[in-house]
Amino acid sequence: MTSPRNLTQRERDVLAAMIERGERDDDIPHAQDAAERETWLAQVDDTLAYGSCGCSECPSIELGDASGPATDDEPRVVLSASTDSAYLMLFIDAGRLSYLELAPLDEPVLDFPPAAELSF
Image (cartoon, rainbow, N blue to C red):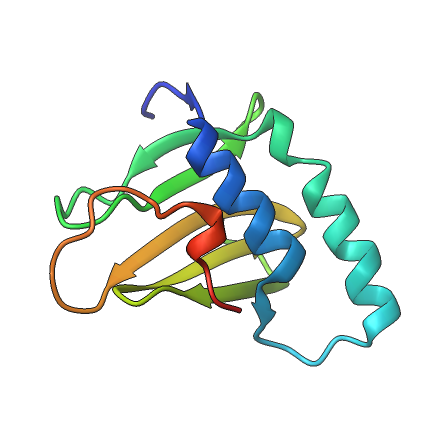
């Protein structure tokens, strides 16, 4: 297992923005959605990066907390956003933040964009 590291301020900002405004991939009723987002947002301060994608063309990171990286467990929720040059997804597995992915559209993107540049 890779030694965890603290998230950068930009990673933390993007993670919070994705939780607050990211588009869901499922049809959860609004009241339940708000409660879940509060729970996920409460995890941000304790979230650590456990590893990167390794492709050398994106800044995607595996997420976890002091107990270790999150695992691919059901239920899975995916929140999405985009920029002019990339598509972003936040994977949440069994209620835990698990993976923050940035998929470049054309050219490599080596850092997460400022949260203000995200489109939801």
